[in-house]
Image 1 (cartoon, each protein chain N blue to C red):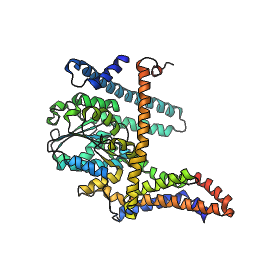
Image 2 (cartoon, chains in turn green, cyan):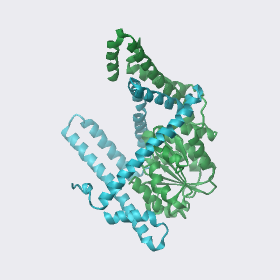
Image 3 (spheres, rainbow over the protein chains, first blue to last red):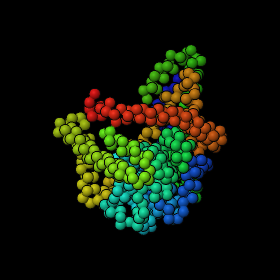
Image 4 (cartoon, chains in turn brown, purple):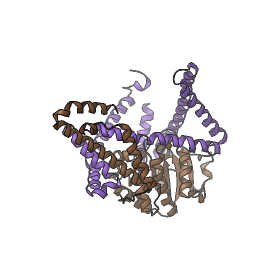
Length: 286
Length: 200
């Protein structure tokens, strides 16, 4: 038995994962979701924006991680829509402008006036250098929108010269350029409040900046998006996916525990010692 | 190099000093040069990719079919984007129905590898192994809603791990890396290190 538990075939594990992922999506369980401190802070700081405030929204993710990042972007954009603020969308990721179009549409911004209430400035190459250039000269760095129209013709861009003229920056970014680059190039000089959305694996990397209050709020992965949807009283895609994520985590933990129990039993039984180690090495080839 | 470095460093410290505004203006121009160079680098990358995969197709090596697919996809996207714009139905169709789902699929398939990798790797054989195993279980359960259903301990402990030992470690790494970057930068600015120019 212990030997079998030490070398569960990978096909079984894949099938089990598929079941625990698809099952709750088809028939939700409704596991309660607790609001984390980072999400609550992000919500509070965005909620404190006054009507007419100008917010820069960085669509710094790509289609690959859109499944995790897009629900964050849509939830925050929906919140911004209720606050009657002006949103300047831009991206330091090549595919960001297309994702911005979709997110603006999904959050209902297309009913507002383009150029006056919101704008999509497109993409600029250069990573952290481009973030620095944007901070010191917004219209110089983004002189046209994603369709090539001059930004000087947009009322929303009037009075925006540097990052100091912006009331808040929100970036949804799984990598670089991301929150760290905005802290170094924007917050350190202009002190513009910064809120970010990152994948769950990147929370640890950004945590020092959050503790130092250089980042005012943080959404971590799909749970962050789900929590934000709940704070907005508008459960969406992320809340629906939370049951599946919970069960997937539980499956991984169960497999790890089973494997280690099997290890303990195989050690205590001299008979299975040699076969167990063989099984273990077979497991390594999975 | 040294002059540009000085301008960029001074720009951070001069603030709103009108007499030294020319330094800020020079820094702004320098940054915009950076953007132009980066855009050219992307174009160069695309040309290099075309050259590399064209060679593979012409030689008909084992990956020639995939190289052909890459070149064809690249040309179709460039033509659609440049000729009709990124909001054209054709470009939007390719982006929404091919690029996005394909990229998401690649990213999502990692979940399956994570399951088998976790099963194989988290095999505790010594004290360090047990510590890693226990930490992983606490964080995994603490970061999913199911953790607080099982016990309030998981989210509390997970947050503590994230904000105390993890942040301390991350700060140490960040400070160490920053000091390393500063020392390398100073060597480059003073002309002591010319490796970035291909010299030893």
